[in-house]
Amino acid sequence: MGKRTTLACMQGALSLLLGISPVTAVAQVSTSELIGAGMPPGLAEFASAVTSSEGDWGSVNQYGCAGAFQFCPDTRIRYHPSSLESFLSSPTAQVSAYRRYMADEWQLATRNGFDELIGSEVCWEGQCRAITQSSIIKGCQFGCAYGGALGRYHRTGDCDQARDGNGVSVCTYLIRGAGYDVSGITGETEPGPVLAGGIGTCFDRDLMSTGGLRATSPFGVDRTGRASAGYHLGLDLANDEGEGAHVYAGVPGTVVLSSANRTNTVFVETPDGRQRIGYLHGQARRVAQGDAVLPDTVVITQGDVGSPGAVHLHLEVHVSGEVVASLGDAAGRVWPLEDRETFFGAKASSGLAGASLEGAAPAPFYVVNPETYLHRRIPFTTSVLSAEQYARQGFSRPDGRTLEPTCAPGAEFLDGGMMSSNGGHNAMQGVTEFGVALAANPQTSANMASSDARDAAIQYGIAAIGAARSGSNIAVSMRSHASVLSGLILSAP
Image 1 (cartoon, rainbow, N blue to C red):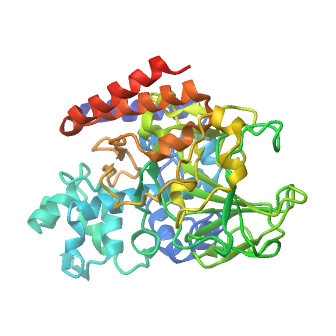
Image 2: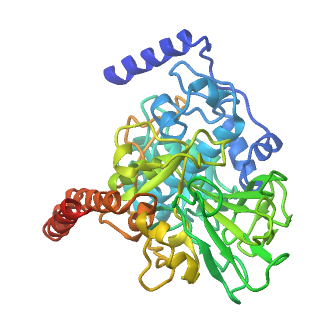
């Protein structure tokens, strides 16, 4: 307790230095406020109940735990790398952090078997309730690590043995949290599968009619002199239906941008808050900011706004910073976005190699290659495949099609734990960690497209070498792979 108390005092002192008065979190944020800040309507009632024992948008407690959900400094920085002031002033950032955090905690709870408690009865201090999914999620405020209070109750069934450092039993939270709709965390909105190149959600359907469907411009290449100047931060798709054709969301989520800007743009954020999908150049936008969408929702119609005469869908995929940073070498080349309110990357920049992100505070989102997120492989046009300008930059698709969709079962990369009844999400009892990718993968190859041939070989080699470090069980084969690619680096022109 000594180390934790000292840390809490330091955090409280920091709050005073920043001019933010530590307060006891007693306020409650209304469901309408939460929905306005991006909370899915079905989850808002539960989230509002959580805030009743936590705080309001501007709360900071004596431990430096901040906001409506009382994120303590270490966890707040993990889910919102920007300043404390920016976190407190942005309800949208707080809701996004909470959704991503609870998605991680639910996966950890199920991995630890805590969902086995659902349906059983818990009785404490004269109250009894049947445990529901929302009970488990509420109990995770004590931490979902196996060694925490919720884990002790799971093993013993004894509420008295399942107390936190303040003497509060986790059974109090299991009872208080029962009976809410938390499908926004556990069901339809459960975090998507692990991808080869990131963690995120693959498209559940084709985004447009497949008649004549083709990829007309690849991700990450410098198109100066060929199309618009600078690097292409998306994948262009077109089909035979042309202008006015429906473009579907492909994923469930919430519209976080619908703008009549120069590209008539819609962005959808997935329910776990880790991924955003952009649909650009729409003839018409069919959804408004704040709308909930399903994979079959029409978000735009195909058009040429911002690209006169070139009717197509410019598709973008943004993945959250903590995911990309955790992948390190295997992230390939990515383009950082300045903050959560920024939706467009710097086309004049050549991007960043994943290997350069290690140890750095991640950006909120990075623009990544959309290819492996597609519902199916799509042929590139002949003009793209034969373009010498792209070949010089390392772009190559020997079979002429986009990369293989690589969705795979998730959760193995996730671990963590958290808080207690003092209020505040803190990682002192274990933090959510994203595992390092276990091998070089097709996503890495695709993201190399912004480099010339030598840089591409170097990046691929770094990815393989990094993969060889990631686990002793694959070390021999990956060392061999890395050695071969190191030879490519030396021999590249």
